[in-house]
Amino acid sequence: MRGLLVVDVQNDFCQGGALEVKQAEEIIPVVNELIDRFTDRGEVVVATMDWHPADHGSFASNSGGKVGEMGDLCGISQIWWPDHCVQNTHGAELHPELRFVQDKIHKGTNSKVDSYSGFYSASREETDLDQFLKERKVDTLYVVGLATDYCVKFTVMDALKLGYKVYLVADGCRGVNLSPSDSDDAIREMREGGAVIVSSRDIVLDQ
Ligand code: VGL
Ligand code: ZN
Image (tube, rainbow, N blue to C red; front, side, top):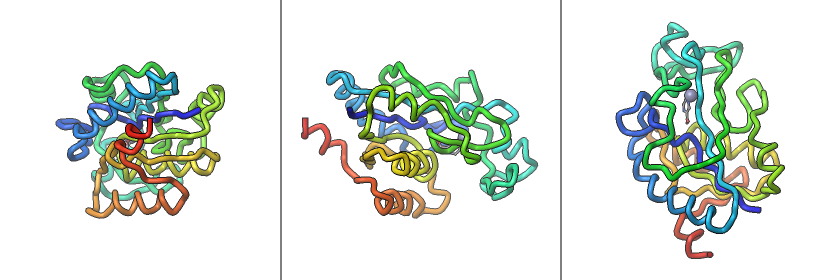
């Protein structure tokens, strides 16, 4: 069974959001078309959501560090972020133009550890995603979303380790790019790890 995994397409990562990813909105029509295709064919669609408590330790405001600088969160190297995707706020909601997605997996809910990956936190606590996919017999994942160089990359690398066949839909992703080459580097890392990099056209024409 194929699954479409929509990573963190939330207001805070889009235009005007607290952790804005440039050109994030450009992915919305691409992602919507894929959601329609997968839904029409009875395949699985699931969204991850960054879902932080207000006292989350990755926020510069809670750590005393500066946004974009590196620090340490409970013994793990951590970039300090602006406050973002705080539970039950507008910034944490899925983008209003994104097609309805019924199934959502929340991550980053433990204040003491960050969770870029949809599967595990940085301290390897498991989310419900792997079980959700296994229950539905999903063995092949198509991944889109935000941000290429953080949550998309960590989710893809864990999916590969867990044995999923992974297609990264490049035109369905955008990156933060704290350094200009970060997204390209992330795509190379995912490819070297075993992900197949495709365009949404390839998938849509395939069917
Ligand atoms: C993300 C930074 C902090 C992401 C989440 O969704 O890529 N990036 N939290
Ligand atoms: Zn976050």
